[in-house]
Amino acid sequence: MATFEYKGAQFIYDGVPVQILSGALHYFRIVPEYWSDRLQKLKACGFNTVETYVPWNFHEPKPGQFHFEGMADIERFIQTAAGLGLFVIVRPSPYICAEWEFGGLPSWLLAHADIRLRCYDEKFLERVDAYYDVLLPRLRPFLSTNGGPIIAMQIENEYGSFGNDAEYLAYLRQGMVSRGMDVLLFTSDGSTDAMLQAGSVPGVLSTVNFGSGAKEAFAKLREYRADQPLMCMEYWNGWFDHWGEAHHTRDAADVARVFEEMLAEKASVNFYMFHGGTNFGFYNGANCQQKDQYEPTITSYDYDSLLSESGEPTEKFYAVRDTITRHTGISPLTLPGPIGRLAYGQVEMTEQADLLSQADRLSAPVQMTNPEPMEKLGQDYGFIVYRTRISGPRERQELVIQEVRDRALVLLDGQVQGVLERGNSGQTVAFGVPAEGAEICILVENMGRINYGPYLKDPKGITEGVRHGFQFLFNWTIHCLPLDDLSPLQFEAASVQERPAFYRGTLQADEVKDTFLRLDGWTKGVVFINGFNLGRYWNKGPQQTLYVPAPLLRQGGNDIVVFELHGTMNRTVTFVDTPDLGSVTGK
Image (cartoon, rainbow, N blue to C red; front, side, top):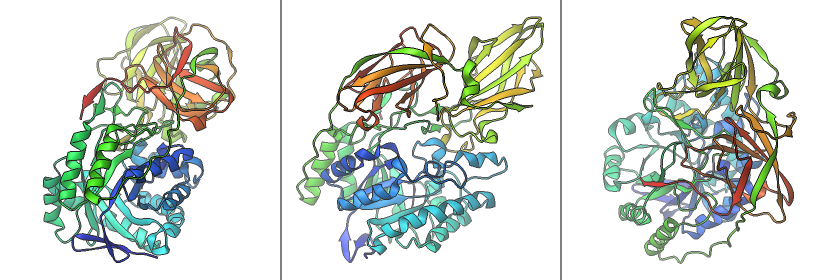
């Protein structure tokens, strides 16, 4: 048993003063086989602590159905860190941001139209309590007060950037305390008056998040908590990317310089991120600071951090390690050996399965008067198809979707008419209808729920209705397509096609190594390897390769399925040994 507390401006662990040098690793963005490798590298860099968020939606994908296996095995992750002698900071607040889908909140919360998020709303807190009743007892044995590595836990995340409900924050704090979380509790916020006033909790450690301006940020924190240690809970040493942007990078020397400023202030620090990892599957988030500026995050969460997406030390790693060595006088540890990469070359996608003609194989159709959003139909992620028949003849009119969340491919009698994207007012689709009538089909992609800001409540699909001209269209057949099981599909020989389709090929691997998948000549879609959802690709970039960790592969044949929305003339994919995250910009 050991206590982690503070006295004045100093953290104390088991009676001994300690400075926290921490790095963020998200177990849910790294395959479990690599947890030890990444944690060993964190310790070899000179850090004494690892920090991780806990995403609620990853652990309770359906109400009352909990998941703590594989990549969700947080207990194994904590045990691995403990085995390396690392402290652990856990941030199990209901909301995490993290550029993660819906900021970690479960999408099924949105099935309740009147629910209020991140405030003292009884429906919301009832679900938080049910989650904490399962999660927190799993963490209790790992608390430092029980002889474990967890020294601190977060109550809420950057709450001052969202709201000012002090009763809500007090409720969360008491919920942790009453469930035996007797370690140091804290909050983290931006270093402004409004954020610190609204996000802090009386009697609880306040920390600040920033990427530069350490002296100014800590000066503001001292105004509110002069009797507490200084800690930057998120030192943003890199940044994330949205689709259509340049890849963000930051000079290693600048990162080390700002770190030196924090050390000069005798502050503790948590690098966000030490190692970013990957937004596998449909778990990427999105930003929307203004209502019509929706920006989904890419699949890679490389973050230009100290370790690359595939776990390789970067120039930033060595600059930070040198700084820690100078500061502590402790020689760095030896890095584990390289994992290794392999360029497997081209794989021909020899088979295909048309999506729309096989939608019944993937899900049972639902008949609804209105084109309802995903959450009302019990769907979390992926795609959704809406079909209706319209009588004719009709003159050419615009098809209006009120409102599309987030990207709709429109077909008339099976022929693609165009794309409508959220926030893109310049896109229109218009058509006439022949005398015999026609079938309208709308395939909508959920490109990631908003994870930060005032528009957090973000249902997916079609949220209001569809009009042809002035007239609303009713009576829809809907297929929910989470794409969590592709085994019912029937494949045939591949051919040229412009409609959404699945393409399948086989990668023969004599040995298994990390690799990167290029999809040159493809437009937009999702890749599955041996049934694992690798994530999204999009030719608008910046990301040009998808990271494929070796544990996802097997010796012999590997099943590769590409779900392509727009068709391709190049039915091959290429496995290379070098990542390509696109052209860069400084941040």
